[in-house]
Length: 302
Image (tube, rainbow, N blue to C red; front, top):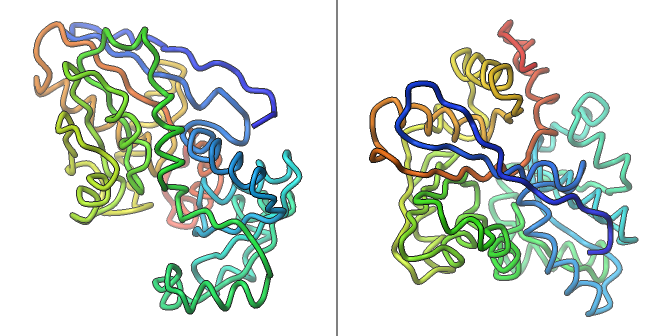
């Protein structure tokens, strides 16, 4: 991709009275709109779309989708038309009040809202044929961006300087980011994934892209499922930002860091361990989540 990026840095988190070292790779800082793992996943997909002569990108997502926002922004920057197939017909009337969708629309994305039942069939030949009949030729990017090209991009997250870490941790949505991290990790490193949603299917999905076995999913910190949140998590996210000047999103990185800090407190990591946490961005989702939190009369994320 040809737009300007910043380099991510490893920020040390100074833990008092702890026997491990914790660092966060600030991938969220590489670009204001196409940040973190979304840039990594889109990099080679957009290169392929351009080389193959496609003018339009089509992808899938929900109300708070970081992926939808990133595709819209990248398309705007690189001159692609973008189409977002959105889960939930009811969202069509909520675009002006939905931060993610209004941002994507501002960046030129055209929406197609479908029922949740129809959305479950989004990868079927019949569903895709109907889309091609309606929109013509387009380059398809899967929900969440995960495919072989996305994994290739995520294999570039770790650098030679990161070989000193014993553990590499990341949040898990569709499995693309952790797959790339596993592929580029060293045999001496353990890669830990923190799923943001419930379900046992992720292990199988990840196994399609990796051959190493130095990885594990920590499934105890999803807070009830995708986009589920409570006061305890909001308090943690706000305190973490106050203590370490690192903003976290409530769907992915907030849950992951909550889990990591809990594991540290319970001596999961051996003494002297060096832990690297990948900040995958997703901060655009905070504004939309705060609307939901306010409606439930809960504290908001600062």
